Every structure is written in C-alpha cells, then in structure tokens.
Image (cartoon, rainbow, N blue to C red; front, side, top):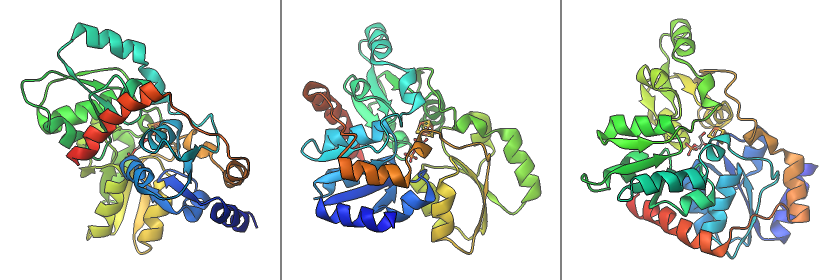
Length: 299
Ligand code: 13P
Ligand code: SF4
C-alpha cells in the first residue's frame, strides 16, 4: 500500500511531512503536521528531521528552506506555485520602494524569496494585523502583494498603507451574493471567511480568520453549522476535528489548482527520488530570513 511505503521511506530518511490545510484529504491524513502558513514555517524551523517534504505551494517550501538551510526541503510538484506571489515581482516592489524611500515594506508570506528579501517584515494572514500594529504610527507602509488582505488590515488597524495589485483567484470565487444565498438556506450557520476574500464578502462574515484561526474558532464555538469562505480543502480537517458539526463551502469553486497538484503518488516519488529540492541563493535567503524573523519575534 502506498501509505505504508511512504511511512517506511520517511523513517529511513528521517523525514517529516508537513501539509497545508488546503491539501487533499489523503495528504492531510498521512502528514505529521497539518497547519497554516505560520504554523508550518514554525514547524520547519523547529523540527529535528533531516528532510522536510512540504505538501503545499512553492513559497511555503521556500520559506522552510530559508528558516532551515541545512535541511533538505522537498516539494512533490515543482509547478505548485501561487499566482498571487507571481503578481508582484521584485522589480515592481523595488520601483515602489524608490518612490517611497522611507516606507517600511511588509510582505505577505505568499511571495517569492526575492520579494521577502526586499521587505522589512513578513506576515501571514494570522498575524498581519499584529505586524502592522507593531510599526510606529509615523511610518509609511508599503504592503504587498495582496490588496484584499491589505485592505482588511487597513480596516482593522486604521493605518493608511500603500497597496499593490495582487489577489488570490481562488478566493475571488467566494462572493457576497453566494454567501447570502447560503445564509438563507442555513440561517443558523456562522460565516467564517479568509481575509484574502473580497471586502464585500468579509463585511457580511461573522469572522475573518487565517486557516488555523478557522480551526480554532470552530472548535471553541457553540455553533454547530458554518459557512466556510476559503479553499474547500480545509473542510476535511474541520470535519475530522468536529465530527458533530456541519460545514458548507461558501463557494464549491474555491479549489486552489496549485495546492491540488500534490498527490499521494507524487509524495511517494518525492521521498524516493529526493525531489524537487528547493534551494534559495544565500544572499537572498539571508535578507529574506531577517523579514521572517522580525515577524516571528512579534508573534
Ligand atoms: P493561511 O496562512 O491562512 O493558511 O493561508 C495561506 C493561503 O495561501 C491562503 O490562500
Ligand atoms: Fe495562492 Fe490562493 Fe492558492 Fe493560497 S489559495 S496558494 S493564495 S492561489
């Protein structure tokens, strides 16, 4: 059985499997740890394993490599990227920085290492508000790449930030109209959405949360029904941890094609072949690490 083979090779190679909350059910089930971007980067930094198989997208594996340069970081499909991370290249950020030379740059973790290297702080959806709040009030802030997470943070903190034009195509399938239809159908359900969603959708939600934030919220909530406004893969974990509760995807089309590129067969292949190995140039990694560590120091 493929699962058994994976366990055997994993043991032999002292490997650990990390999986994002959006991964396929069978990947989540075999992973040593399932979490959001923040948790997974902390896990990568602290594990004693020699090899990390990262079941997620490229920027997540790259972040793991930056934090653990001595470990072998494997991404089972090299094409598993994040379109949002491609939307604002380092060149565009450098141009913006030259227009606002005194601005502090905060980049969402969904960026390439070269963009993190141009940033003062990194943040995730779990801590964006805390990171921005920690920056002195008089400082101008450039926030990249997600304009929707950026505008959510502006609303929460009252800070006036310069935003770039990135967004997540998967989260754009979640609409205010779609949520309103579901609310009619399930009037008792609480609405939880990811801050990558459109502000119109966030406005009618009960909570805007990172993926781990959603898992914690559901576990502690007295409610028994939830409309879930994020990538549908998270519903596997939510159901597993809360078998007595009901979950309705805010949009059945919210499926990230990049996250879904990782399959159980590719996971086995990655372990067997030690591929694809993620590397980050030393000078880039050094600068990017400073931005990530500044974030970790705040939260
Ligand atoms: P989280 O950090 O909330 O897991 O989100 C990552 C992501 O890519 C959302 O689309
Ligand atoms: Fe990127 Fe959106 Fe996929 Fe998250 S869900 S990895 S932001 S494309």
